[in-house]
Image (tube, rainbow, N blue to C red; front, side):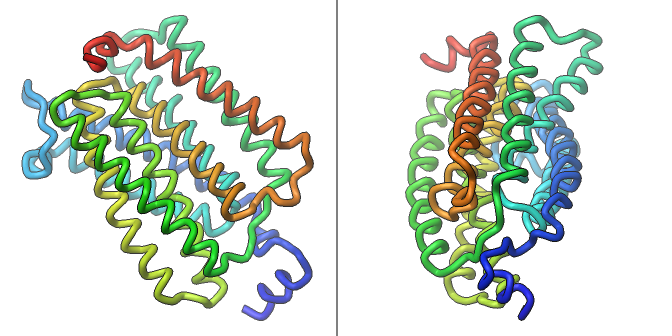
Length: 299
């Protein structure tokens, strides 16, 4: 603990010696996330009818397997956040999009079309470039009470907005809206988890950290419900693409504006962040407009 505080006093990053260790852990978590999403989708669509209620889903084996895999993905992500900055770890989840596309292609015995391939390439290239820039310029910071309080306040606003989306999608299903709501919540979950982990490592676990854990539980539950709604009205690729781009965009924005992980990054790095993020968003947009249910979702 003394070493950590000395490093902070000298202006060094808290976890600099293990800065790169979170990357392979996050990649493994992305694989688990993709497989878990696929199994959850099969659980929602199983037995010839859609099911989105928790009581019905827990009776379906595929959904339970998917939930277990996603739980493992969350644990791996938390482990990655222990070693690397949020800006480095969170965007790596885009690798789940490739796993999902390959798995679905193998199941249906078809190769991705040109539009789908282009969207995947844009997503992966954009996120990959972002991670590369972030890995060279981002650093862990000391998480103080002000950081925790700001993230908690913003998360409360996000939970209220996501709940409104949840209510609206009950009568007017929209895979895009449900995915966006879940992605925003998951971005806040990752940011708050990083903040709580930082407080624990620093030996400053107090009531704000406990409030953060409560907020994590609420956001995860609401986000999971929105994901099930998205599965019921959209494809696996759309759901995974939306989550793996919206989630990191929100988390990275918070990492820059609230946590200050890019405080020492040069101006050219921010140009790279914007360009890489734009490419990833373009990939998700191309995939979303390619979905046959899109017109129905907007009705």
